[in-house]
Amino acid sequence: MSNPIKIVLADDEVLFRQGISFLLQREKNIQVLFEASNGEELTSFLRESTIKPDIVIIDLKMPIVNGVEATKVISAEFPDVKIIALTSYNTKFFIANIIEVGAVAYLVKNTTPQQLITTINEVQTTGFYYSDYVMDIINECLIISKKKIKSRFDEDDLTNREIEILKLICQQYSGVEIADKLCLSARTVEGHRNNLLRKTECKNMIGLIIYAIQNEFITIENLVN
Image (cartoon, rainbow, N blue to C red; front, side, top):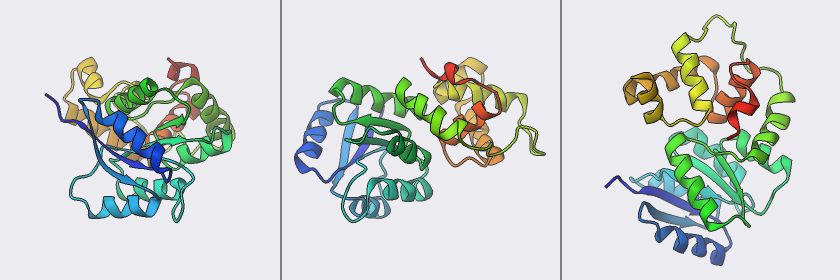
């Protein structure tokens, strides 16, 4: 049996947070490590705990340190921890903002339990999971409205293999699936992914997606299942 997906929850609404925790604990492949009531408690736990979560599920509006600021810290200090935003806010500004600073999925609090479970499993497997609605906002607010972050014709150009892997990453193939598809080892795929982040100067998955679309390696339609 594979290791459970380790989760940390951060939400100042105690009843809601504990309800989510109860829901997740019923899943055989999920383990809730910790519950935080604000971003400060969350980041303190991550810094002090020897066991790091795979995924943090975070609200945007919290006292002391809000979800956006906490996400910035986590993305900088714990880049391997994936962040799912789960919030009451559903406006373009909030969605674009939290994704730009590092969230790999965005859900509103009226989502169904099954949608939450599906998102967690997809994020764990592929690294990100965006709905059609969120992809439209990413296209409008983070791609069309911004200048290219780095041109494909820059001196440190991508290899054909890196381009191939970039396209598969953007189409939500997992590292294992990419390895199988290209007859490579998972470690080799991870090495290519790290090279992509370095060469494109992207900090996270959404950065790679924006880079790929802006430089016409992939279209927004290819990202939407």
